[in-house]
Image 1 (cartoon, helix red, strand yellow):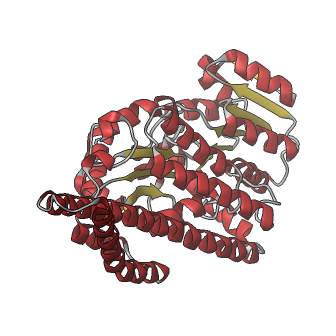
Image 2 (tube, rainbow, N blue to C red; image 1 turned 180 degrees about the horizontal axis):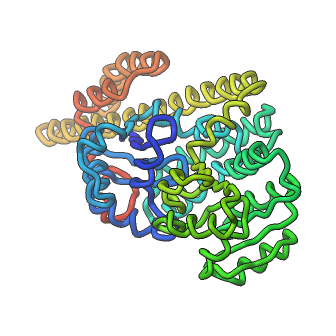
Length: 434
């Protein structure tokens, strides 16, 4: 079955659109269940991060699978068909495989070589697999992607300089102020992204670190670990005035900092500048804050200027990684083609044997006087005829596979011999997705 990828990313889609596609991780199994109600897609994995939202699936028909993904996104995200057509990229089979290998290896990330994306891909697959949505096809694809990512990291220097969105955010703060030693930082959120940002800020010399989180105990634990102080999340408006730099990365479904709060904080600060870095998707800070005087707001897409410098001197590692990925894609696609061809050969032989045995049985029933030796001779002769008739087609098909025979060609062969896959063989996704 065709593998289908449909998604949006920071390369082509602005943040204000991407956040409309976003799927919260806490509810991911429920979204996968909902997607399974569109039976044209028999397996499914949803990868949703700050920079991309991608849906992976497989289907008997590529066109029907794409239509099902469109319908699911329109129903679950409230998006119109024309909005999807404008922003959604759709790839299949080899192109989708290559894309996933690049994503898992952090070659498609905003920050080249960042280590978080592989963990995010693994978590997306784990959720789908445990919920029964990742069957044989996607399990093989994602397992190979994880091995490819490890090979890229082991065989290139791409991951030697550990970088991430969080580290870039801290670097931007350092560039803005020159030094962070006399600056106070307010961190909103205590999740992985927030914690990484805090560690980088401390590493850049910040002396005062305030941590606010809806769960106060988590804020206390992180603040204690980093030598900072936990503050009351419910008093967020009051805490803003204490900070020169606000870094926000919560899992809130809507903005938690609005212009009114920032205006009040600026008044208390006597208009001393505030720098706000929002690395959350959906965004934590209302974009209108960026229009305020003395409030300088940067969201995740604004970090691209810092990212460009990260690319310098890494082109050689990137080219080496791309070469590894291309070799792995070719190997994976070729293996799948040979496996599909082998299964087709087996199906053709089973069909041919059934036809041969049926005709022999009818013939022998009309010749009751034949002995056992004659029976065996007829069996041997008919088997030899079948083998000779199949030998040349099989030999030609093997050569076609070595020359990268397309899936359409294999489908034609299956139709010619009457061994097309039945609906019951479409995959091992969740029952509702068959």
